[in-house]
Length: 218
Ligand code: SF4
Image 1: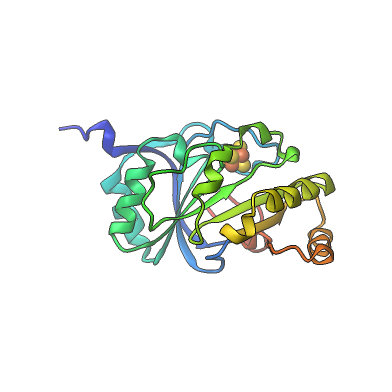
Image 2: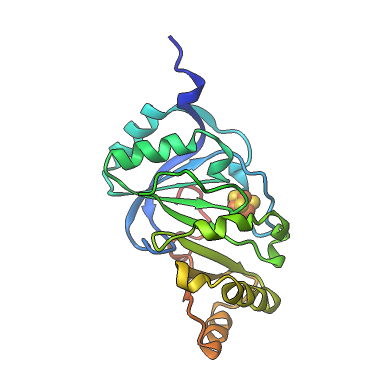
């Protein structure tokens, strides 16, 4: 008998790598990349996940994740929350005992997810060209277990992000990550802006890009 649709997700890839960003940076991590994203950020480096993919039973995803033998699992995309069953997958991964994180665009409701999941929520800057998609109702839902991430494309983005941190008291709510958009702002320049302003945010660079460049599945 076929698996009910409620137990299936469209998947682009599952692979083992080193977590390149956020709080779990450096940990061997299994990445589960779900297919599809309703956004089109100008700097997107995972456009290959917009289309295609294959339907996987959640059981099969869990089996594949287990084969890699890592403690950390990151559910990413695309925009993983664009698939309603993503919440079921996250819960099953938590039940299986993994340290589970979720990378999301910030455009979709994050309420109701398993509280064991560490949510890494983007706030899209003007430079992303998708700022209008930000779901600001997500902000009050963020806890110390979560992180909010700004990808900074230029000085105007930095000023906007700094204003958002202040306006919403983000640094009191969760970790705030500022990341330079690859090839658009010099990492050193961004670090110096943060230091000059004594901004209570974490500068980060994508470790996996330093290690493997833009290679897919890394
Ligand atoms: S939300 Fe993420 S996956 Fe979607 S277009 Fe933006 S960067 Fe790409």
